[in-house]
Length: 260
Ligand code: MN
Image 1: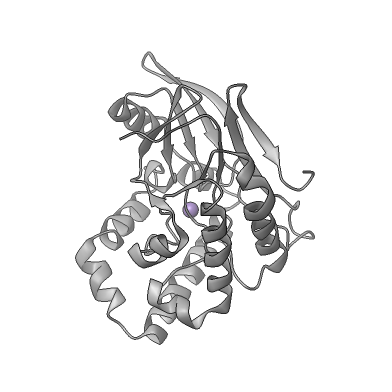
Image 2: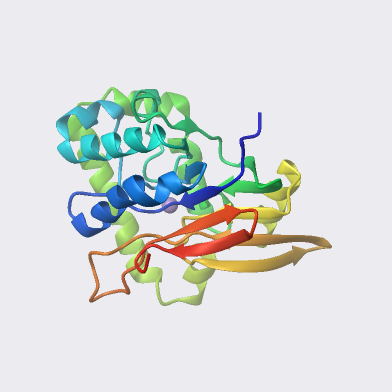
């Protein structure tokens, strides 16, 4: 069953953590004010900076606050969630308590009678072979089961270690042209995902490069929208940003949640 709605708001890459209180507050306001204006809200992954298991939530007042905000939003509109590369361990318990419906990556939805293919985006970054091998392993159900059986302190320290590594990599790569290719989606992967889903409109996050693209490969044409990440807590390093993609009968547009 393809989800069908008259209007929708799509967000991703909020990377929520207690150390970014302004970003978190904008999300709470979003759940209260912006979200309910649409018929459906889609969260396309990396809602949290990291997630080491639903059971860890009971030790985190912050995660419980986020859970309550989404649960409240779910009473006002339909909510959907797709796993990101940082919170792919969000499980049945959290989804049930928030009232969100889990979507596979990729998934097709229909908004205002127009089909869109949704993805978090990390699976589309196929130029980064090392990452795709890593992703293949951590997405294996038996590996996840093993990890979730580890003591919470171990899980947290493994997650911290992985984040440090990816941060170092990011710092090293940031300036090089190779990095720009490796950390972005490839035309080939987008073309294949759209062919599989029989679509020509793709929406994803992950790359933190919000833009609308008109693309083609070997005669196949499509449009691609990239969602913005959110960061209201580091105004010195980067421009504060938080936006959603809004879709209704008027079409697709970016909604700046800082000006809104
Ligand atoms: Mn991501």
